[in-house]
Amino acid sequence: MLHAHLGALALMAVAIAASGCGGSSSKAGTTTAASSSQASATQTSAAPSVGVTTVKVATGKQLTRAALIAEADAICARTNMEIKSISVGNMTEFRRQLPQAAIYYNAETNKLVKLVPPASMAHDWLTLIKSAQLFSEYAQLAGYDAQAGQNVIPAVHGAGQARQPMTAVAQHDGFKSCVQTG
Image 1 (cartoon, rainbow, N blue to C red):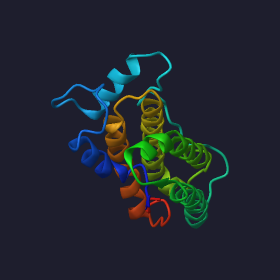
Image 2: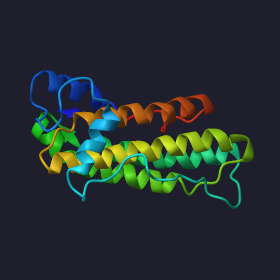
Image 3: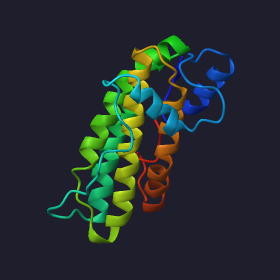
Image 4: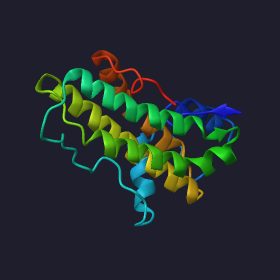
């Protein structure tokens, strides 16, 4: 059984799409992930929207660099553990588990956004938080698309793209668990 992380599943999704198992609600061609996801979102009013949430860094007593990294890594480690507990071996299981994965990533983002970075890390932290939020929104859209029987490939691909800035900043700043993927 494959223990999978949604961001890393973009590769699996592409492979599944190539084999013809991804669903058929998406138009063929060179549509971007964002436009495909937005098109999917407009099909019904219940679909989550992507890229519209304004992200603000929490204010208050600033954590030290070491404390921020420790607390954020603890949050990410918990999410990584939850994602690893999701067993995915085929497309049916993948689609069934996407909504649960989205819940885990949304909870992770909601916890991370409450941390107050030191001033020296404010810019990097905002980048990390924005990336985590966008990733979470794409994960929610993928979960919605899976439940609706729609093509999840564009949302999964969007999630993978959205996660890249978070991973880059986390790696640059010395995070460990926030760099790792489930």
